[in-house]
Length: 126
Length: 420
Image 1: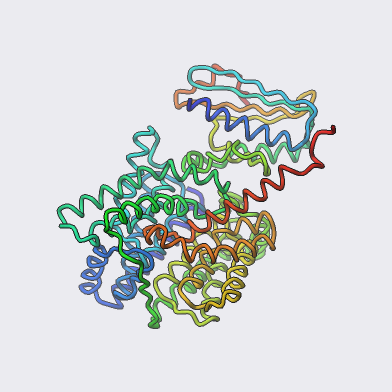
Image 2: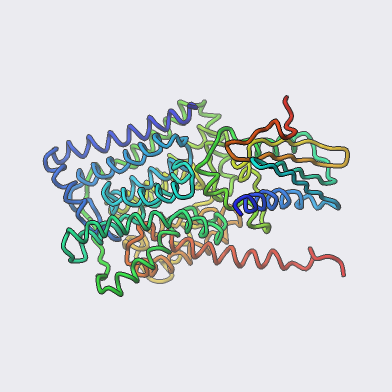
């Protein structure tokens, strides 16, 4: 149940963000393992380098903030009326990549327990 | 440890040491020690001005609670930044009128038990533990004010604190969803909610006494100078850490932020600007009190410290001004005095609603402040003064109403429907 809850929050917040761009197409893909999960989001809206950098910054906090993740992170994905706040999920994930795919924006998120093994997933090494 | 974090450690440690030494010098170590022990045995419900027991005593009490908060942050390896500073300085401020080391510890213990049960590190719940000390009076009121033998009332007070602390992570998370981060004192909102149940239980048991206001009106130079001195230290830090021009630029950039929870201004990279924002908030709060001729006592010093506390975590000059103006207007419209305890404290504490002005604009901020005063004047009696952050409780209710209305409006705009 806990896993379902956190996945729901993350999917909710990222889709809220993507829907702000009013895409005509959006895809969410999930790959789960015992100790972690990989979420991919695609839409049909290409973003500028500056926008990608901004998204990257929001998803990559300067340092681990467990006190914010466990408390304020609960707001992630809960409310889609207002602007999305990607930093709410930046504290809760292990890794994120943001890029323009052939069709539009692509956001990849990896999350998992302390036993999370990134080798089982396709995290970019660079 | 980053430079801004090191500076924060130095500033907070300096504040704590200054309060401790000033307190000792003013009243002498023996008197202070005796009075601080005596303070631990006070019920400490709203509004209990600890400076009535001695300004030095209140200062040493505040220093000890501040040191407890700082130690907790250090031991749990939580980074000292906007949210943590907000929690520690708020605790310290409320130790001028309610918090003591004794009434903080059981609450913190309860949150620790909840963290163990949820298999999380205590650091994850550290903010809830620190802010949760708002329910401190629940502990000491049961321990010393309900006329039971101490061998029953003291364990009962500890148990009540542990249970309240244990329930806080669950209720704080739920309360956050109600106002979506537009009430900065969210744990105060949660504590008020829990306080309603605690107060009702005490009323049912015939153990709840009416509220009274203990309010010191005597002038004390030490109290008068605390806030401007600390504010100037913060402004000086802003000018030392970065070039003045950079700090001012950062300060102006921060003013554009709505301040909705969780907005850690230290994370924005505008370190000097954040220190400048905090310092100016403190200084202007103090100037307002001086201008209206309000007493600088325990509760007002506590309120100013709380404004300072959130200067790195949601409050800016721009988003606090409309809310404060709203409270002032409400005070005048309803024929109250700006220097009465309720309106005066509400003016400073109403800044909990600053994100409403930051997000929805000047008029929304004024309306929120106007409504806040009306609410806060009655909510204290609902929880029997057991929640020190009464303005956080009232602010949570106001923010929830605003968010509900604005959400309804935003989700029912026909121009954004699918074409039929």
